[in-house]
Length: 597
Image: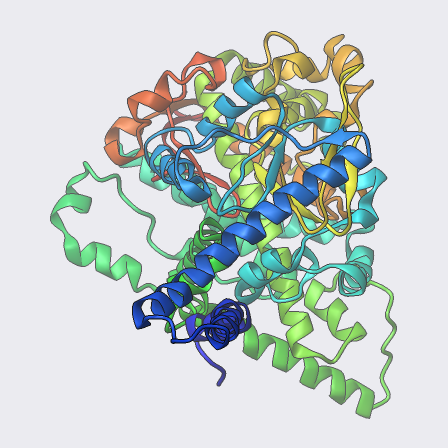
């Protein structure tokens, strides 16, 4: 085993930490040689103690001066820096942590955009970190100058324990390799996907209906997280984790939740939940690393906190991968057909095993697709039902389309889903206001410029190796891009003249699935799974009512509820994000079954 993260990180810092004191000692020795007597001990000790901070100040100022000089040489400027009071912008970092706990998790960035424009420099720990919600600059990073940007080593190190070198955590040739392996599997819509969706949707909706018949609201977010987890693991491995078999939670105000601790312990120890809980905990620990920037190993000094959470994930996946590789060797030994084309009935694991014998590569890729395929769809389904509960007229129209196209009981087909235009517009509007990945980033490889979007204004200069964050959440809610009603939930905007006015002239204002060469391969899969579940839901239930009151921990705090950045002027849930977006403490709802209506 190698060194723990903390000591390994400090060991890498030794050269740059040791150089200033060594230089100070050398200078002192030279200076003392020209004096009749040696310098006092306290003077030498002070010079050595101050050598590192002084060297850091000189280095920081040198970088600032160099960047300004290089920017001027290109006729450009650096984005305006967010004002701060403490060195290293520590006051801004602390404020962001505080706001993140109490308010909308992007509140500060909304405010900075209002004050500094849509592109600014959120300088942290003396490092430039540019942030933008400008579609032209996002397009530059993702598409037009794609080769000039990468995920970068910092993101790779932070996500490596969870995602390894999979497609979402790799650059260059490794990214191309993973992309080429996975692309054929998503190149067509497969009937078997709908078999998987139907089986797990029926299980989830039956379980939910049984709980509602008890007169108890259901945590819809928990339900669809189980549905997407079981669907995704069966899709990937041919074997699902059976998370829908585990007991579903009661709201905190219910007698069984408040008075029966043993019941809660039993649920936590249910075998079907162990994988789900481990995967969730691994994501949360990974997200925490991003808050500590490059010094995250110091927060995990004696052990990898992400790896510590993933035991149940490894216990589920490792035997399946090993068995798939063993069966591949047996087929090769028997000289059976090993055609590399994608069969309609094979899993992604079976497809990957055809292309490589490296168990780690296979495992990394399946975990990457599991994260993308499960969490993003669960997020979309969660906020879809939230919006249906908040907009009964939208629910009525969507349900009518389902009944007109599919009917009250028939399983929807791929052709049905393509025909439901309002369903697609509804999902797009959910994705616009609640994108699954609200904030992302790239790292510049070399010095770049972002062309000014304002006539007469200089371009922005992007130094090499600079982290450039971008937010599709902020971009999707900009009134200058989407119109004065940008914060109003209205699926019609994807069907009426607003499409021609806003979206068609500038398609990069809508990026729920990213864009450019790294655009999400599973985009159509996500639309199909979301649409399928919503069809089945609306065939079974005719109305939805939000009931966050039964689980007070899930209610939005006052600052969120009336936030000026809230959808429809009022946010009744607390949106959070680790690697993807979710509702804090669940989305609790009541639904009326069609038969009961």
